[in-house]
Length: 251
Ligand code: NAP
Image (cartoon, rainbow, N blue to C red; front, side, top):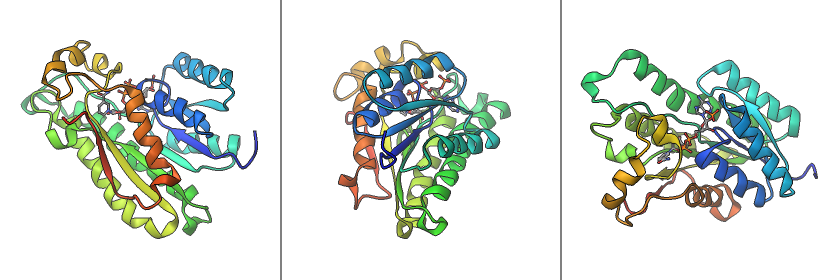
């Protein structure tokens, strides 16, 4: 692999939307760092798949909600590849269906810790490496928000929706903050995408239940989100920063 080959780090890159971003990123020519939290097997399988297809990838463990993990994760990318050109803040969680009047502090803190604090910590580390202000040579960041940020997810998880509202605001503010430092920052807002996240929130049938209420009468695929992310990372989007692209099938 040439030293000139660009490097992409994707948090939560081992499954679902993140895995689709890693696969497409590899096909687009990036060397890919695949972050995961606990499921080493899924990360190893994806790395093996990328390598078998002729790409370069490695798995990197770390909980984005833990500062020392985030610092170690970016450090591992530094050591493995020596550069960072593209970063995707994709790791995110939902929780069990609950009304706001049923939510406990532990749930709220976990949600905000992973989806908001995690996104900020990772953005911080990415900017430190990419910004011309810090001696970097620029780069692109894409945050994975959610259509929930605009819909509010009543009766399901308003806390999750609010955490993605914060991701939208991070996108707008950071984009303007680093616009003169060679970094573009954008976001995608996926709608209902067919991944395991719904089962992790205790709703394995969520895609099926919502299908008929969706404008296209179908959920999206992880690939469909990944294409939008790869576009925003690419030079084809060179004048696009602070943008939040709905990838929600019109929802
Ligand atoms: P998923 O299938 O549940 O996959 C989650 C990925 O994130 C896994 O790789 C998981 O690693 C990793 N992860 C979870 N918690 C983490 C943490 N604390 N630190 C680091 N990695 C962590 O999720 P998905 O559906 O692909 O969702 C990806 C992103 O899209 C999330 O931000 C989600 O909010 C957003 N989104 C999804 C949908 C949808 O309908 N699917 C819609 C809108 C937005 P392990 O395997 O180790 O657990």
